[in-house]
Image (cartoon, rainbow, N blue to C red; front, side, top):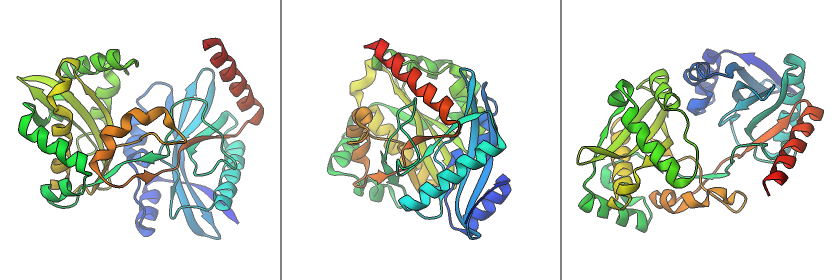
Length: 332
């Protein structure tokens, strides 16, 4: 029998320790507090899912209030004690549907990581992925370099020899003023055809999560920012969240130099790995443009559960699907 109960973040930490689970930062209390500062979002709660009194998974959910309806998101959740079978995941998601329907009638669906599509459906929005690159950071600088693909080792060595970029942890400078950093993001967005988040989105992430959980690393050429990255940290694991690069400095090999600097700086602090968060695959080719850069830093590709939607109010969710399909047709 599958049981679902609300628990505190303190309980979640205790269970994670007991079952030797690594909790992503998005499943932590500090992340929940950060999300509470964003308009239209609020922490919904943490759930423990068990079968016959043995823990199966933990998930923390954020409620998103948007376009007149509410959905839950469990980013990088559920965190499973061990990877579930198709049958176990289906049973858990069905119980989760019932639990949410009984406890919060405003929720239309929950978006979470699901290995199978037995119960879950393709997301209405956002770009999911089922593959990522996790770079191991334990060891010396030479050992970190040695575990890369041949192309990665070549590019990093060439960058160390030729790139004029000077790399540093500039978290405190960015907290003081984000203006200079934001200009680089705007330039990147204009070049690559996307809309950047507001300046406050990046600045608030740094200030709310704090230096224990969030860092900004930057490269500078002749004193001007060439590129920067925001990294999150939790439970001795890091995640590459945002990054950008000035167009007029793209050929100066600053990204390879900055990433190698980040790898070594985090390793010296006892961080065991960094997740470069998402590459393209046969199932999700939209992110294929990221593959060439990210995959050179390690030989291994890591499979992850892609984001999927689990309907809670089936009729309303179907209405949202119809509206999405109609909108897509109008774009053609």
